[in-house]
View 1 (cartoon, rainbow, N blue to C red):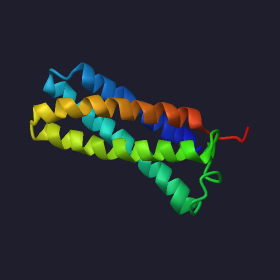
View 2 (view 1 turned 180 degrees about the vertical axis):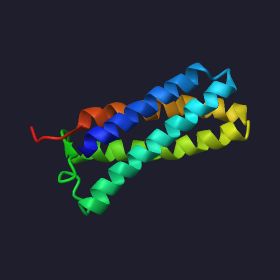
View 3 (view 1 turned 90 degrees about the vertical axis):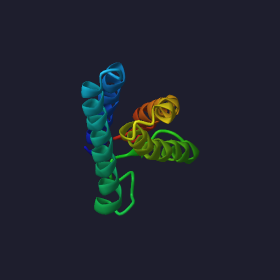
View 4 (view 1 turned 30 degrees about the vertical axis):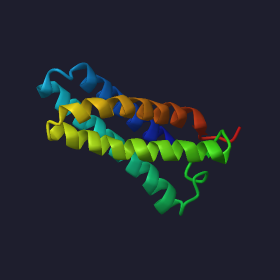
Amino acid sequence: MTLIIVNTGMTASVVFFALGYIFRKRLKLHRPFMIMGILANVLSALALLFSVYVLYLGDREAAGFIATVSPFWIFVHRFVASTAFLLMFVMAWTGLRHDRKRHVRLHLIFIVLYLFTYITGLLFFTTKAS
């Protein structure tokens, strides 16, 4: 069940980020969509971490996140996800500070990392062992 919640939240985050990007020239629309994207991402990440580490004491499979790939690829997914998560806050900070030059440069990296994380999260985990 948690996998469905996490996937739904991350999908909402991607949709909000896409809408924010579409309205990047109109700050009154850009900011709320990006904030909703960040909130959806953070809440989904908290649901994942709470489920795995608090409810199931670190047992990812018991929490419903059964890997379909080798542990190496799970490590790669986690590493890229952590990097994208931190970069998301740097992006928010540079946007709030009106540091357009850095903000625009960072979004090119962030989009690639975030979409990689989103797609691998959908492909690398299932709720049932195959």
